[in-house]
Amino acid sequence: EVQLLESGGGLVQSGGSLRLSCAASGFTFNNYAMSWVRQAPGKGLEWVSAISGSGGSTYYADSVKGRFTISRDNSKNTLYLQMNSLRAGDTAIYYCAKIHSDYSAFDIWGLGTMVTVSS
Amino acid sequence: SYDLTQPLSVSVALGQTASITCGGNNIGSKNVHWYQQKPGQAPVLVIYRDSNRPSGIPERFSGSNSGNTATLTISRAQAGDEADYYCQVWDSSSYVFGTGTKVTVL
Image (cartoon, rainbow over all chains, first blue to last red; front, side, top):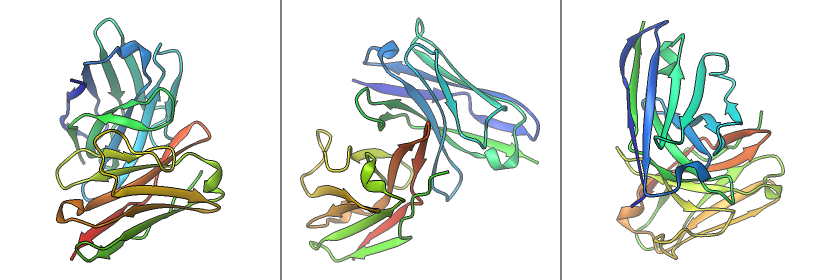
């Protein structure tokens, strides 16, 4: 069964850092690009960052560029998101998502992990 | 940046047809994907590449895309279709989501 399981969320003060992890199983992890998508409480979906299967290419939303870093360890089937200089506006559920190989859609999603930034 | 506009809400009577629009500049030239999100759950892909259904998605869900508008259609609406729906495209090295539409089944 294809599965994504996020961890690492929690409560952090404004200006602090947090690292999220996403453990993948049930598919050949290094064959697929992966992404992080977030959702603030009561709000819509917002794409955060994406990374190619090899890890050689990374993409960021303007709202997190320079503060967040996406990475992956294909030997551990794990995706990461290092979040620095956190702000109240970063408070959200963070979802890990698998990107389909043939088209630019998120075909598998994790359950999400909550990040709360207190001011 | 590329913007995708959806109606805030759509209501549909049980068993009838609901149409959810997604407006964007020349969106017909892009691949549009649609997600369903029920309260407290992660999103689920229901339509990819304008009009294709992933395995396990009922035939009642269909999509189209032309000009400046993409449309998700839910036929024979059921109570279980109540959810938020989001369109999404890839543009200029970014993934873009629509503003989201809440579908209520009456």
